Image (tube, rainbow, N blue to C red; front, side, top):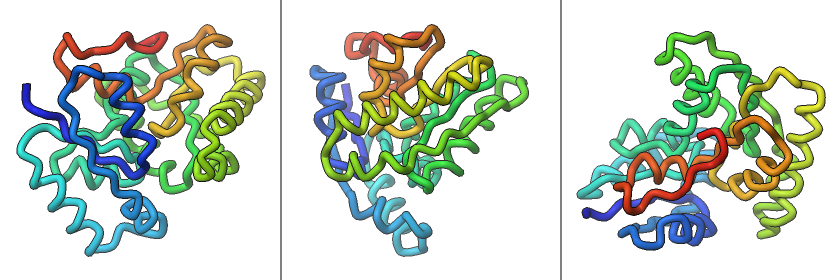
Length: 212
């Protein structure tokens, strides 16, 4: 099987994906500077740099950064959250979409609405701003980051009993999936597992998250 090239904006994702698919041929390209430069806006220089890097890949590629996902898709990569959003739309709304970076909100919301449009269902999307938790991730406190996300989502759901599924918009949030699933009866969707299920052959696929 040809290699799958993954474009990351954080080094921590390398271990995550290698653990999820230990037998797969994964090539990791880590560019934290892309996310830093994309926070304000994706200018022409950054757009060209990302596009050229993705177009140079001989086989399939996956972009694990939500912020640059739309551009990566245009260049030929699979957006990590697209398979997840398709599942969320098939479950149906209302969907709670939690995000930890302001730059994630617009592309994630647009992608989920696009998935709903493909199903012919009305898009019921409820964003949840968890940007106050991001400094924990930046500091390398992944356990604290996951715990903060979990607590905030559980508190939000107490006021929104109508929610049918939870989407953790960024790959960096995936660690909160397990504690949330242990406490909830609705699907909690995380992008790394679902994206690999969509892109790798069956022998490399992992057991999907509850509700997937």
